[in-house]
Image (cartoon, rainbow over all chains, first blue to last red; front, side, top):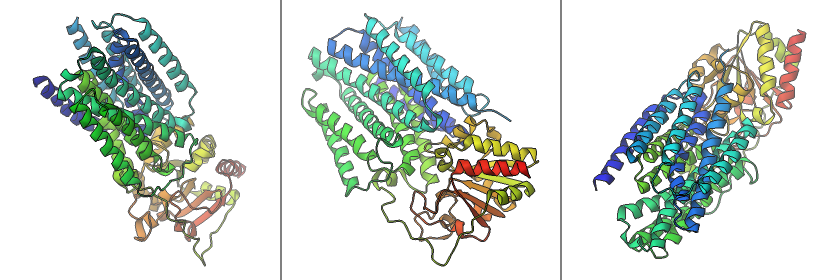
Length: 92
Length: 459
């Protein structure tokens, strides 16, 4: 029970922190913010790595590997495309 | 070893928070993104030390394939196609989260220990599957619409909201059945209904509402990761997923407000089902020529350009930059007024203009530039329509009424660059075009801007 409560605790604080941080991002940067935060949501990658590597059954390994591919795509594509966009933002 | 992994996860969490913090200014955003990527790498490397990982070949193959496709996508995607790129990546993230949750059930079913899964585990697995699956199919449809594989027009379906609600209830019922009896068919009902739900909710939504949907799916992809974090009791996943969920939620709110609609309204009521209103009788528009506009611009003190998605479709951004430079040579400064839904996703127009080398200090958001319009000598409206329609302010009968708009009608002179007199997305006539101080410059936006620049140089 304490673990569950602790997880909910973390979730609630992270939500407040998120609202606080994001409301300070100017509209000019909303697209890079979305693609960058999108890359961060690919963090699910670390869950998929364990499944792909634990060798429990061929089916689980296949599902885990597919998850690794999709999450990596999300992470790599997201961070790189965000960098590509942010490079273009210049001052006069 | 476990301690090292947890400390690395803590470092990664801090990196993500710092990354989003630095994204709040164009000067620090790039380094912020780099810090975020570093946090991800730290999390990944630490996870490879996990005691349950005994084989690395499939991990290596997965990482290599994902990296190759992701890198290729990110280098080749056009800036105009950014909304569909983000939609696609959202979908992949959601699918990955759901897959990880599904393997938790799969492992328990294979080992015959499904009966001993706690109610908390079963609930969070259900949530993760539901959110992840909805994100996946919803994003695929959004991608297909933005990529114009499917029509971008709103598609009103009879009693659509009831069917969506039915699918949501069916997936919840499946989740409850699954929690009651993990080996039973509830799991499959949940997965099937959730896939259908994402598909069904996004299908009727039109192109104009896409900024809201892309932001909403962004939020869901974060929440899917957070739900998977609850399944795995992994705090890094919970923190990162929740930050993204909050980010997408705020952007969804901003976009809905910019269109004067609620998220509920966008999701459950397709707009634009009413027929287009006919042109106003007895009123006529005045058309003008590039030469006349060039003359007006050269005598102006304050010039503002309002870009709409039509400008991006005509690929006129670089032509606009040349016009800005030609005006600067004459000593006239041109600013840009950006409506929140000017592009196909939040901040999209800013990226398109940045790509054309237009400095971000010249871009003004709606609240900041609206008070200035009465002092502006010439406003150029390029491919924008509904976001400059004064009916949104004046006419309670108009479907646009209440939507925040750019008050260009208050400027001294308005030049509207437009292909023809067709109404905008909402199918609503724009009285701005008939105003005393409005002149229409008909033709392709890119060609008109180029003609303007040429005429300006010949003055």
